[in-house]
Structure formats: structure tokens, C-alpha cells
Image (cartoon, rainbow, N blue to C red; front, side):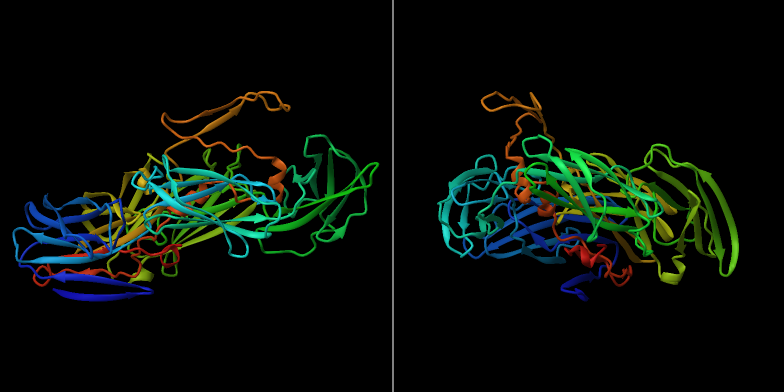
Length: 618
């Protein structure tokens, strides 16, 4: 076996190419495995003229205990791909590897050693408040889930420690029993304790650890709430900024008194009377004097409310955005470059500055010019309104000599320019394959539309979807000598929150491939909570109704609203879950195409690499 090593920053990439007299196969093998999950390996049979049988062996050689082999024999039809999976269960210290053998050539084997990735669970910690004072009761909840957000059944208990700001162990739950993926408890704080940042530490048997900080401080709950908002979207060209100031006590009654405003440190001269609510128009011409190239200018607005009678002063601040334009116009591309003789698709997206589409948008005027060298080849003139999502689809023809496409989009009297260069300037004569995600916001259990371009006529296209270090979908497409095609892929929860799509094709005995990432930010569960009344009193009954899927567990948290004015971060959020689910992402931008000569090389084995966002795609 001849080995080629290609260096990637902080990550070695090993590619093995082996000689056979006829035919070839491609194997995708993971570099890492995790406990209590499935490990997948993909095999593609390319150019053998008929079906082939392969034996795949998963070797488990722990330091303690007997060795074990899990075997699977799979049949792969010609120009097809198949995935084989094994359950990992517990993975102790030791050696683990895959062996692949073509049964038509049993003396030839390919081995790939595997590293054990110890993060096998998702741990989340929730507290009832972000801040506590001496004498309070800390209530907390620990969730231990698998990578499909289901309770981790194999894990029976975790170790939990509460550590104060001086690194003293206050309390330990050495065998906190997990029931349906949850442990919850509480602790009464003493009246005289160390103030500052305390830590809740959760350690699972696998070594997975999660920390959460809470604040212990002598605080007084705020008795008032002042909110500063702007009633309309405001641009730099507007003469005034409409502001709404709401001042109320935390129990709901309005604050009466006098209102004074300060903007970016400068006091406004006028005083306004307020009775819970006041609306003010601020002259922008005297405030924003410097012209900025930024899309938004932020103004710091401070409201000072002097309570009538007592003279108590209440204060609150907010950053108010002032936009350059009342709209945002961007271009979503099917590919970063033009491909010769391949229609180019792109979408103009029109929204307000916050990203929301307009209910009644105006017409967008588009002038697109196609250039050949220094000559103008063709001009497109388009006038249309975007759809309900703010999207305007465009498509342009290209030729072998097209060098670039210039797009000028005019909306509300202002023109925005975009340029798409030709791939010929980037790759020269080197063959290439490009895959793009056409669906703007992929949703769970919905199809994702994908487009593949190539510099050569494809006959067979292989694709694999990799998420959490596993192959979660695969397939093949017979292309019939085309240079581009669209196809759809159905998403599933294993692709949440992010997945990588690998596409491959063979051209002139070279394996050409590309990788694209897409996000699926949905959950396969829901919860709706309603109250029997929006307002109640002490000693009165309040009914809370929660709706979700059958057999779901719903956790409830009731908290004094005024506590949230002192801090945040105590609750569970969708974003926090997605951050825990994130794992290293497949990298391919450093892998050039590999030569696969039918007379020199037969088999290609390359790793499913794990690499963080900053190494590929961002």
C-alpha cells in the first residue's frame, strides 16, 4: 500500500491508494468514534462491471477484557454505494480499528485505526435564578441527553459539585440519580457565605463535564422598570427619531414624574411629563453629524425619570439603531463562480434592515451584463417584484468564454452592484466539482435543494451527508453526461444543527470532490404553555396548561420577573442546546483531487475528518 500524507493545520490527513489489476472502490472511514452511538462506514463500488462483496470488521482491543470483532459482509452493486453501521457501546482504553477486505481478493486488506471521542452526552444545567443572596435557596436541574436530545438511558448517575468563589466544596451529590435524563435538587444557602461567582460542576462517567456559574451577591430587587423603544424604523436621512418611554413599578402601576433624556452623553434641554408612558421626537439633524459607511449607527439613549412627590430618580439606557437605508438588498449565489456553459442561478433578497420581508415591496430593476474578456457580450434587463419571502430569482446563460457577470440592482432609487467572476480565472485547466445549497433556510423533515456544477461531463455522482462524525445519509445519481444537475435531500434530526455534504465524481481516472455545509436549526419536539389568566393575586389559583407530544417531559420554572433585570443565563435556550450539539465539522478544502489510475491504483480510502468552523467555511 502506498501512503500519501497531506498536512492540514493541526490535523493530519492520510490518504491511501492501493493497486489492483481491475476495478476500484472508495471507502469513507471515520477517524473518531464515541461511546453508545453508531459508527458508519461507506463503500462505493466504481467501475467493476458488476456487484462486489466486501467484509468490514470493527476490531475492539481494550486494555482490560477480551478482544472482540464485529463483522459485516455487504454486497455493493456496480456504480453504487452502501453504508454499514456498528453499535459501539462502552469503549474502554485500548485499540480500535476498521479492516476492509474485498472478498474477490481476500489477501488484500486495508486497516484504519480509530480514536475514541469521549464526549458521548449533552449536559445542560438550568437554575431558577441567575443571582442569589445569602439565605436564598438554589434550585437547579441537570439534563443529560444523547446527540438526538433523547435521555441517555445507559447513564444512571452523575457527580455534581457546588463550589464557592474561594474554591471551597459546599456540597457534593456523588451519585445523583438520573431519571428520564433529568436530575433536579436544591440547596439552602447559609446567611454568611462567600460572595462572588460560584460554580455548579457536573461530571458524567464518560468524563463529559459541564460547568455553570451563578452569582452570589447582596442585592435588592429593583422596584421599577423603564423601557426605551423606537416606534418606527429610522434612517440617517430622517429628520427625527420617535421614541417611546415606558416607566412602571414592577407590580405594574405607572410611575408619574418628569422625564429627562441624554443621547450619547449629551443632555437634551427639554423636560417631559410622564405618567407611565411618554412619546418624544428627537431632532436627528443635530445629533448625527458625521457620515459613516457603516450600515447602522448606534445611539446610546438614557432616560432619567424623577418621581413626583419623592424626587427619587430612576434611570435606564438603551442602544437605538439608526440605519443607512430602510432596506437591505443582498445576493444569494448558487456558486461563487460562473461555470462555462452552465446556467448561473442567484437570488436577490430584499428585506428591512432587521431581515424581515416587506408586505408590499416595490419593483426591483436589474441590469446584468455578461463580459467576454474586455468585451460586453450580453445585457439582461429585468423588472420584477420579489415574492412573499423577499426573494427574486435570476438565471443567466454562460459560455466557454464568459469571464464575469455584473449585476446592478436598483431599488427605491438606489443601485447596488454585485460581480460574479468565472471559475476559469480560479482553476485554469484543473477539473473541479462544486456543490451549492439552494434552500435558504433548511427545515427539519423537509427537502433541501442542492445544485452540482462540474468542469467535465459527469456520469456518476456519489454523495454522503456527515453529521456528528457519522454518515447519516448517502446515495448515488446517474447523471447521463451532464455538467450540472439539481437534486433534493430529505433532512432528518441527525443533521441538526449542522451537517456536511460530500459529493464525488470521477473524471479521467481522477476522484474529484467537494464539501458544503448546511444548518438545520429545528427541534423534533415542541411545547406550548398557556395560563388561565394573564393577571392574578396571592392565594388565587392559576392553571398552567402545557401541550407537547405524548410521553414528553415538560419542566416548568416560575420566577419573579424583577430578578431577570439583574442578570440572565440561568435558563435553557435553543441556542445553548445547538452549541452543545455542535461537533467538529468535516474539512475538505485542503484535499486536492486524487489521481486514480486504473493501471496503477485501485482503492481510495480517506478519512471523515473533523475540523472546526474556522478551518472550513466558517
